[in-house]
Amino acid sequence: MKRSGVWLFVLLCGCTTFAKDGQTVSSVPDRFLITRHTFIDVGPPNDFYEIISVHGTGSGTTIERVTLTPAGDACIQPPTVEVVSSAIPDTLNVALEGRNPCAISDKASRKELKRRKQGLVFSGAEISMHVECGGEERIIRADVLDRDMFDPKATTPENTSWTMRLLNRLDKAFPSGVLDRPIFAGLTEAIRTTAPNADAARALGAGEYDRLFGGAPDRPSDLYRASQIPPPAPDIRLRSSEPFQPEKFVLPIYPPIARLARIEGAVVVTFHVDPNGGVTDTQAESGHPMLRPTVTTAVSEWKFSREAADHRVKATIDFKTNCPSKGR
Image (cartoon, rainbow, N blue to C red; front, side):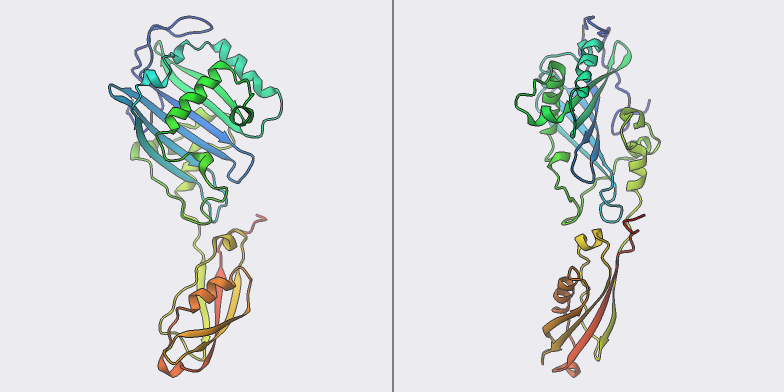
């Protein structure tokens, strides 16, 4: 199978046998893949999907992480795909704390997964380690619950605790994770995205990773395809400026929070042109309060001809989000 930027199947681990309910394993895999579906009770977005490829080398451990994030808002917070690569100096054996994942029995995993039925779960992470053991792909599940993350007396079981520690080691290789993002990411600054390489993009688009997130509300292939469609750009235009047109025109910025709220319409301002062609004494006569400040800021940078000096000018600027209404 052709290797892509992330591994769908884990190859060449060298294991000879694997533990099905108690059997021992003689060798430790040198690479594996972890999928993590993080869900939180604040948002949107409320769900984040990660495909983490781990490969042990002679000098440490290399990691590649693909993060797929659903749209927070179809207009201003579209779905994103981010790909980052890094490494840690720890050998894979150190990162695994000397444990062999192939030795975790299916019975132990099933027992730990039953905890989810005990009490309400508002946030957490559904984690699967995909590893080749004895020539067969094995999926080792772990559910990290909100109490595991926030309760100092959570009594998290052994294998789930080990999984959390492993992921913590791997996460430290990157500047931030999904839980470090602001709730309204993208409203105050552009979301930085990195396109996957050609092989990873093909695998994502073809749905090769969809089976790794069974039961999750989103499919990676759908998120990837949606991330390739740019959101609609807003329209801002000068409808009129009377009795003079500016020689230097600065377009207002559409406030992101106004776009999120689908606020549109016209803003009318009047202002005085000084002897140097600059703008003074700007007054917003009408328009939505969220749109007025950006207009007055832009107008303060306009310049007019000498003929406009000492005149009062009235300008109308139209805003249109080009976004679907919230009710659709």
